[in-house]
Image 1: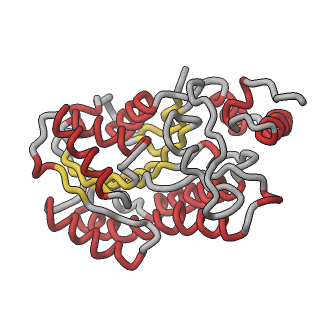
Image 2 (image 1 turned 180 degrees about the vertical axis):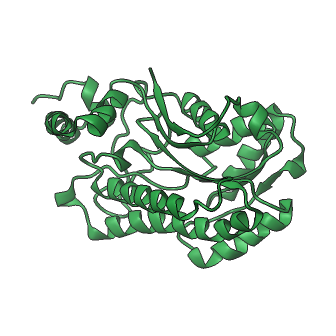
Length: 309
């Protein structure tokens, strides 16, 4: 078992290709990683796309690949550069997206950055940056799109959280906090929108995935890059993660846990046996920190013996 698609409110099963064809989907963080793969698979489904991230040249590269491998036309994909930190620009960007296609069917909040640093060594500026980007940036875009969807009475807002938004992990105190904040925000928002039964609020909680997120992670200082990203082979392929995401979106799943074992089992333990989960967390967390200090990638720490001098 490699994934858990929870709270499915659909009366029948839909393939992503049949349900998402022709829909207008806005993807943030579309220039790499999960966002880039979302663009490719959505294009193959026949969705019309709005691709957003800071790097316009990378967005154009993603658009070219979408056009090369899917039956879309140039006008079916809008490249819309966007910086989640520039919240004053979000109203204008949303208006541009709606004006181009006439409406937005699905917003996928995927933009954000991770963290690889110990709390004792991490500047408060890093925590502020994580909350500004991952949480407030996502909330800002959502608040611009939400009135459009409530007016239409239909739509989907899908937010890429993380399994560390459900249970914390060492070396990611700020990242985990920002994802916990997203979980709380969207769980609360979902209950506010009970008068809109055709408006889906969905959160996606991936475990470790093969992407650039580790390479681009914050460290203990704002402008200090990750020293070593480590081997990513033990993680779930990005294509598999995105495939499961789209199946969940097509079937109106409110929350998705997407991870390979043993990570998925660990989060089931957090859900159903939290006391036991604390014991496992302390044991694995100690190993993770030890390996991090020894220069081994944080996620591969569970599979790698620490270096000895």
